[in-house]
Image (cartoon, rainbow, N blue to C red; front, top):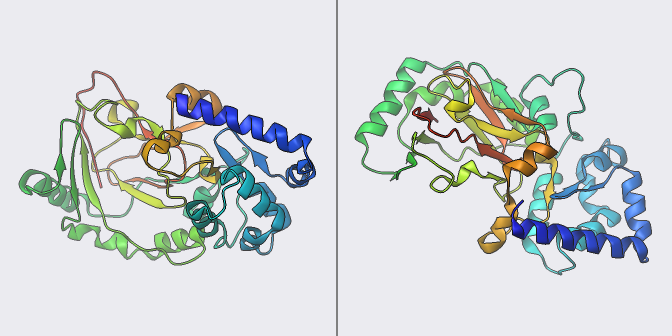
Length: 305
């Protein structure tokens, strides 16, 4: 874990110890009795929500005990913490169904169920004309001078890709996304991303474990070639970490609190690799802890949309 995170963890442990001894100890005991969890990286309201607000999950955002805990532990006692309040209300008030982490048993199936329990949904085939889509993406990468390029990647935003049309109008995908969010979703465009073989953690920050500091948001990936092993740099997701309400969503120096070492992640969570054949991919909540798999001395590029 990074130094900033270790400092934050120690401060949080001291605060919780003080609260448990003081008059607010009964508050934490009451919440914990209904499943509220105070974790190393954030707060988990999911089990409490399922117990107290089974029929109306969104009502949790107005629970007086929840709000006290949020103020003390996530806002650190600050008043008018706009970002914490915005993300909390946006993420938890629209839920139509309670959520909880995957506890084993039958593996979730379907987009909304997988997203709800795991934080991701793996897809073998998005149902697209891959020959046409590969041609369009290759033409853009080779012939469009715009975009971003460095030693780690080549990235183009919003280039015309007519072969994406069937996916953007796929009713079952839209239904799964809307059910997960609890309402309509907005499509914010697409990018063509080619991760080069020379990419390293120093040149490609997404090799570091992180969350995107924006609360619940979905990204959908389409692999233009088979990604079946770590040498292909699949995205790695720490299972069920999308349920965390993190202690910090701040940018700038505090953004370091959103980054974690691989050693810590691997000894704390179950890590799943987002492998899929060409034409498949995955959909995941970027509030989950995730990274791209770094594979040293690799000569394979990863190209995806």
